[in-house]
Each structure stands twice: as C-alpha cells, then as structure tokens.
Image (tube, rainbow, N blue to C red; front, side, top):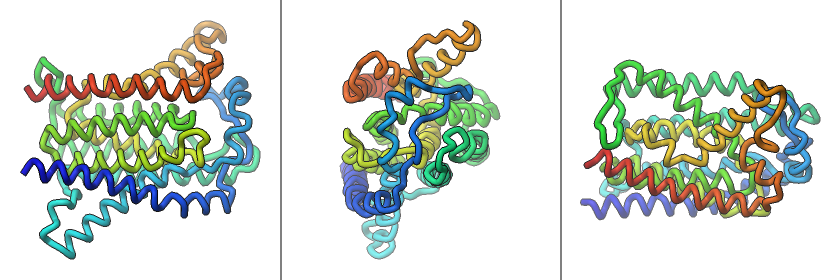
Length: 353
C-alpha cells in the first residue's frame, strides 16, 4: 500500500539521520586526534595558476579543521542499508522496508561507495602532503578516469541491462538516442563531478546536495520507485546529519570523500528517474557554480588575463566583495529550494501527465 511506502521512505531517512548523528562523535574524535587536516591552506586554480584572493580569504580556515567529513554521509547510508537488509533476514515480514533492489538501488549504492572511497584516498593524500599544495592529493586526471569508468559502467547498465534508449523531454515526449545514452551518461557524470567545486563554504555543499536529493526523493516516490526514493531519502538523512556538524563553525569539511560519491551517485539517480532534461533546474546552484568557473577560465584565456569575477567559483566571488560566508550559504539554500521545487513540478507534470 502507498502509505506503507511513505512510512518506509520516512523511516529510512530518519534512520540514516540518527545513525549519522551517532557515528559522528567517534569519527570526529579520531579526526582531531590524528590531525586529519591539510598542513598548508590554499589551492591551485583549474588552469594551474595561483589563487591569491581565495588563499587570503581562507588562510585560517583549512588548517586545523579536519577533512573526511563526508564519511558521515556515505557511512550512514551504507549502515542504514545494511541494518534494514539484516532486519529483513531476521524478520522476513519486515522485508518491505529493505530498500536494496537490483533494478533500483544496486547501481546508485555501488557508485556512491566507489566514488566515496576514491575520494577518501584523495583526502588522505592531501592530508599527508606536508607543504606541496599543487601536487597534493590524487591527481585530477586519475579521479577523472574513475568518473569516466563509473560513467561507462552506468551507461552500459542503462542501455544493455535496462534497455534505456530515450530521454524524457517535459511536455514534448521522449527523444530516442539509442546507444548515445552511454556517452550522455558519461558526460552528465563528468559535469556533476565538475560541480564538486561547490564544496567551499561551511554548510554550502551539504545544504545544496540535501535539497537536491530531497527533491529526487519526491520524484522517485511519485514515479512509484519506492526503493530509489528510500535510497535518496537515506542520502538526504545522511546529509542532514553531516550538516548538523558542518554549519559555521564547521567541525569538519565534507571534502572529496563526500562530494565525489554524491555527484556520481546523483548521476545514476537522474537517469533512473529519467530527468536529465530537468536536472539543470533541480540542481541550478551546481550549474551556476560550474559555469562561473568556465566563464572565468575562458575570460582569462581569451581576454588576456582579464577576469569576470574577482575569484571563481561564484560563491567565493560573493565572499570577495564582502558578503559574509553565512549570507552566501543561506541565499544559495533559498535559491536551491526554489528551483528544486520548480524542477520537481516540471518533471512530474511534464513527464508523468
């Protein structure tokens, strides 16, 4: 019955939240005890150049605050999935609350865990690097290769296993693209992976990703993909648990182990809900973030070093012109909520009518 599915989604979401809250003290103690933070603040721009404005704004923020906070997110999702799977084995009658299923959640859960573990390796390498900021962490090219491989696996799964050959265009019907679904899947995953640069202010990435996954919880539920809705709900719950400790002043940063797993898993969710066309609306803050970086790089290259923004991504530009970080974050949340709701409505009305 529908009400049982609704209970399932809310039960799993809240379980993931409380599991995330429960594991955080243990993780936090370990992170601080072992000084799991960067030894030198600062970063390098995507074109390899220096970022003096960013480094000045954040010179006292990256040293002394641990990375790897994203473990709270994917750890709570994994433990929640494991808990309800075990419960379904011990008490078969409760199996309806087990949300692990081959056609809906195997691939997003697999992608979340693989992406997160690769991100964990990158975080570990950045922490262990003493002073060389430029060469710290897992090289970008290797992370990109992992993303492409995950995209290839996902595209193969959707085309050959699920038989997906078309994408929905709201109010217009379906656009058949056949095997092009595979490169499209890879491109979407790369684009979302690039949007990971939104992880730069306390509470920003956690809040935006929670809004996006909450939106997809609703989309999947109204599509009767109840296991997928429960998965998105679990991710939302894990993100809210992380956000509880990440709002200013942050106890830890999400870093790559969080954002890499989330963006790659989100790609799978987007294709499972056939909402590629409305993704730019639902995830507008991510789109704006990526576009601001592209515009900045293009301007510097073709306008002899001239910049459009004081610093990119855009949220750091607002910081640089004097906005307090919390004001930037809260306004991003507001915009994120508004456009996530608009995208949800367009997806459901335009595709499910």
